[in-house]
Length: 359
Ligand SMILES: *Cc1c(COP(=O)(O)O)cnc(C)c1O
Image (cartoon, rainbow, N blue to C red):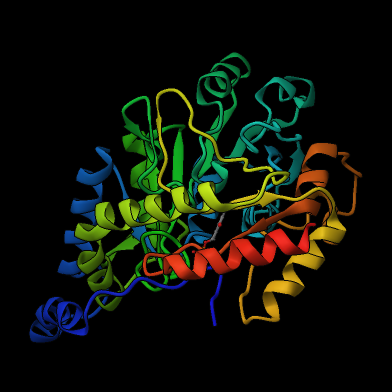
C-alpha cells in the first residue's frame, strides 16, 4: 500500500537514547528539559526569539487569536485544512473568506481590502502547501487598517522566504508537528509570537495560567510531553536530509507526469521551497474521481487536499461566501504520495496510472 504520506521515523535506538534522559530524571511532562531543549533548537533553526512548543497545530491557532484579543471578524483563506477555520469559530470569532490567488493558492492579498469592515480585527492566512502568502502586501494592509496578522504555517516548516524562515512572519506564526507533516513530534505544534508581551500571555495560556503557586490569567492545557519532544529532538537534525530527499522525488514527478496536468508548485523568486506536498490540478472533478479510483485499485491512496473549499463547510451558515477560484481548485486538486522512502519505481507506476486515467 502506498499512502499520500508516510511518517518519517528515526531509528528506535535514536529515539530511546534521547527519551532515556527524561526516564532517568523521572520527569516526563510539565516543561521538562527535553521540551526546553527542543524549543531552544527550534528557535535557532527558525532564527526567532520566541517560540512555544505545544500540543498540536490547532490549539496554537486558538492561542494566537486569544493572545491578540481577536473576538470579531477574521479574514481568512478558504483553501486550507479545516483546522484553520475551526479555530476561528471555536474562539467565537467570525470567519470572512477572501478568495485565493490562482498562482500561489494562498489568499489573494489584492482582494483583502474590500472584505474589511468596522469589525475586522485580524487576517489569518495559510501558507498553503508551504508556499508563501504575499507577506509584504498583507503586512502593509495590516498596518494601514490596524489589523493583526496571523499565519497558519502548518505546512511551512523549512520553507525560506527572503532568506528568513517563512514561520518568522506576521504578528504570530504557528506550525503543526503532526505525524503527517514534514517535521513531526507524533502530535505537536508551535507558536511563534514576535512580541515579548504576547509571548508572556501564551506561556501562561499553555499551562493553566499559573506559574507554581502564582496565578495570573485564564489558561488551558496546551503543553507537550517529554515523549513528544524526544521525537522532535531525534528528527530536527534530519530535516535537511528529509527536504533534500523530497526534492528529488518532486523532480522525478515533474519529469514523468503527463502533459495536461497543472502542477501548481513552481519555483518563485526569493523562495526556497520545503517540498511538503505534491498537488496536481486535473481538468475537472470527474477526472479526480477517475484518477483516485485507478490508483486505489493498485492500493495507492491519494487525498483531496484541500477539499472542500472551507467557505462551503456546513458550519459556515451565514453569510454565503463566494470564492470561485478556491471552489474550482479544491474540486480538481489531488495530492500525490510524497515521503522520504517513496521509490522511483513507485513514482513511475503512479504517473503511468494517472496518464492512462486522464487519456
Ligand atoms: C495539520 C494542519 C493543522 C492542524 O494541525 P494539528 O497539529 O493536526 O492540530 C492546522 N492547519 C493546517 C493548514 C494544517 O494542515
